[in-house]
Image 1 (cartoon, one colour):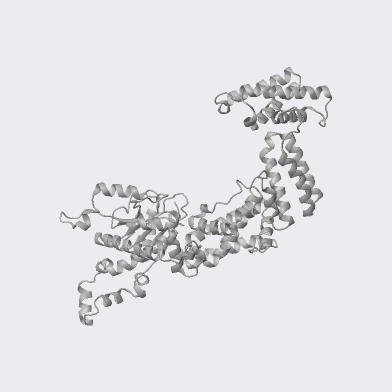
Image 2: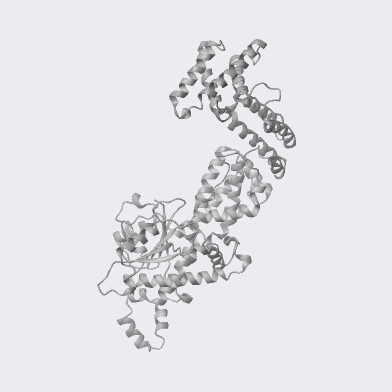
Amino acid sequence: MVPILYEARTAKGVVREGRDLDEVFEDMFAEQTEQEREELQRRYATRGDVLEAKRLIDAKARNILRHYVGTVLPGGFKAQLVAHSREATVRYREALLAARDELVREAEALPEHLRDVDPNEIELPRRALLVRAYQQLDRLKAMDFVPVISPGTTNDEDRYTAWTDAGKQENRIEAFKHRFPAEIEAGDHPIAFLLVKSMLLTGFDAPIEQVLYVDRSLKQAELLQAVARVNRTAERKTCGYVIDYYGVANHLQEALKAYAAEDVEGTLKDLKDEIAKLDPQRRRIRMLFTERGVTPTATEQAKEACVQLLADPQLFDRYEAVLRKFLATVDKVLPRPDVKPFIPDSRLFAEIQLRARRRYRIDDGDFDPSLYGEKVRELIDQHLESLGIEQLLPPVSLTADDFREKVAKLPGARAKASEMEHAIRHHIEINFGKDPRRYRLLSERLAEILRQHQDEWEQQIHALGDLLGDLERDRPAADDQLSPVERALYGMLLEETATDGIVDETTDRRLVDFSTKIQNVAVETIHRRDFWRQPVDQRDFSALIAQRLLVDDICEPVQAQALADKLFEVIKHNRERIPRP
């Protein structure tokens, strides 16, 4: 399950101009005397009447839609709304459609220069929402809001029968469970909301649902079952939301008392508590650097200093762990204004992580902000794009044509030397199995350069440049009689059988011939169908190599199988380079 964030939104907070229900009632019956209004309110304005009032539903629908577009829609997730009655579900559909059309009009009226701006950069919350809406305009225009209600009497009005047909309900519910289409085609109306009174509050499993809007009384088991609609796990879903327009918080606390504390601990959290986590989490990240004498700021020098510190694998792991928590909280709270002070640091810390991942070739060298939610992905992707980060940072592989050019753009000699060192180290690591002797010698040469020129960055750059040139060429000399695979086999034989790598001419010739012989055997063997899926065939081939070692008197009998296994590993790492028969 994912944690659920609870937020109470009173009716007063969503009614036009902030007026409460009594003020709305007075406005609706303004022409009546005070005594007449009191009588009307006593006789007709029950809680249910108020909850079904069109003006109030219109106001709440507008508020609900704007919350959904800013908080849930960016992740592609969907919503369920629990209304007071069947009549209220139908009115909510009409109100949500109207609110959608209104939001579309406002978004389309945005000045052109604002349409592609990062909404997190915009100070006014209303305008930021319109930018978010514009950037999801196709999906917003097409989305639908569907009541799912039980049949009433045989005299049901037509406005109900359209939503009570069991066959149509089943199809709509199934459609709701699927993600929004990547491309909205003409005539598409993906279902974003299910509007219910009592149906689908128990036993309904839809991981795509992230938010439950509550606008009627729910108690005890029914309340807990309803809340649990949004805690199902789904890819990139970090939390669920319960937005309460009715005031079920007290009932919820009572309902939770029926369960053991350990069963419900952490499953339901007040959104205010998540907001309160942001500052401590940010300070924890900053302390990882400040305790080591570095202050993380947006300057190139400061960012490079942070990246240098993260060369320590243990520190990097700690950094990723605390950053993961911070960005997950940011995603939960976005787009509320409370998160704005933390957005610059979110971008900065993510950029430092990406730089470190690429510098030190951690996993694939990239940072995937979508792991923390789509709102964080959007926040960070737009920042990295604005920096031209793909042009600023070198690619993972030093064999790229423009590697040296990208290194030259890095700030300062230390950054350049560090990038070259770790690119070379990574290249040696991923290619070691292809030619263990050659890459062991290169690794020793790298270590010697770093030892000789410790803290001498310009000298390191010069020496590493020479080593880089050898690696970039990475091919045998023109007069080498051996293929790359044969040369790798020869190197392994030489290392395992010769003292100090010194052999006489006769022995050398014998090792060269044996290397060619083993490659020829590999040509006839490893390309058989499913060879690399058959452990028995692979063991047989290794045993054949051991037998050949003994027949050709290449090594002592006690060494044969161990050396054969090493030669087999060289062949395995080079299998794409071995020609077919």
